[in-house]
Image (cartoon, rainbow, N blue to C red; front, top):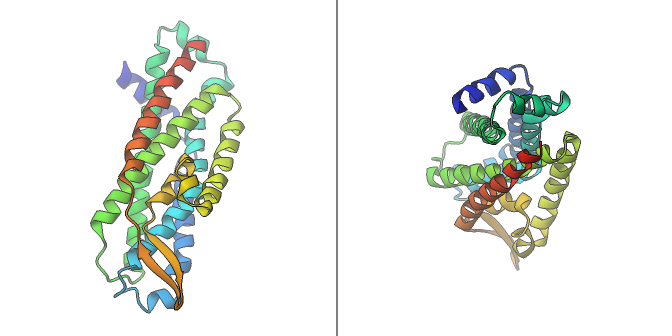
Amino acid sequence: MRTSLLKLEVLKDRGTKDILAALLVTLVSIGFMSVTFFSSDFRSTMDTSEFAWPKLLDNILLMKVIIMPVFIASIAGRSVEIEDAHNMWNLIKSSGVSLQKLYFTKFLYCALKLFIFQIIDWIITLSFIHLGGMTQQAPLLLISTTFVSQLAISYMLLAIHYVLSLKWSNQLISTAISIIGALSGIIFLLLGSKFSSFNPYSWMGHLMTIGTEKTADGWNMYFIDQDPKIFILSLIIGTLILIVGSKLMRSK
């Protein structure tokens, strides 16, 4: 049954604009990073500076704090928009399909799409950096931990907006919350980690590994360790939200 429902989601999804939206996310991230990547100051030291790769990754993560919540909300909203628009929940229930199985199948399909999109996003981005002239070896451990943690945060945000999309048939509500969340994510990051730690929309910013401090000689950069708790908390919170949200299907 689960396999049949998943195939149905794939067939229903044909023709959506998620692929173009995912490409736009990648282009915007690369465009923002390119401001640093093609600056004369960066290119004069990019082959020798230990901060070169981390600085580019931080630029990418900062932009993703802004755009990923909206993109994820759009994926979650599209997964239920047909059923909401045509009031199909009762029809589905009367056909003998378990709404609980449908709930988790829809989320699984959204998560798979998001996973694939993010793999492609990183492949395109890293290829762009390499083709753009970066000869310094890529820090594979840092890239791997950043990617995996980003997946966990995306999973949590997807769970949040998937449940919101089921709660309110008007998908503009979930989209509005994602925009507010993205803006608050940036604001909380500016306020410092004591505040941003409590805002899940800021957590991609916690994967950034460069800090700055003002000294008598000017601004100096230093490395910050990524917090492994972000990965674990994202998985736990996302799973709890998904489980609690499954109860919404009983009211459909």
